[in-house]
Image 1 (cartoon, rainbow, N blue to C red):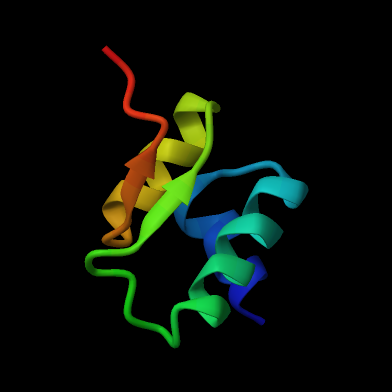
Image 2 (image 1 turned 180 degrees about the horizontal axis):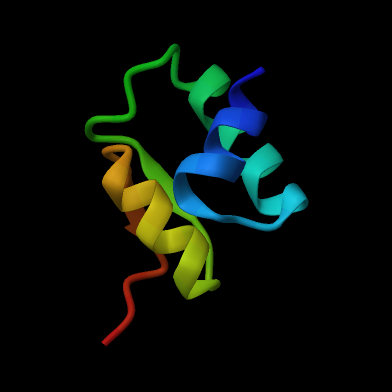
Length: 59
């Protein structure tokens, strides 16, 4: 399961790993150029490592 993979790879909370896995499913396994909506820094970092862009943009 993809969420389990993200749990081990990025050391996320279970709900965060599920959100990232769902986003991967949504984008057809191609996150390049897709926005990921998140305010949690750990989840944002994991999503960035997987190729997502972000909303909202933080200063």
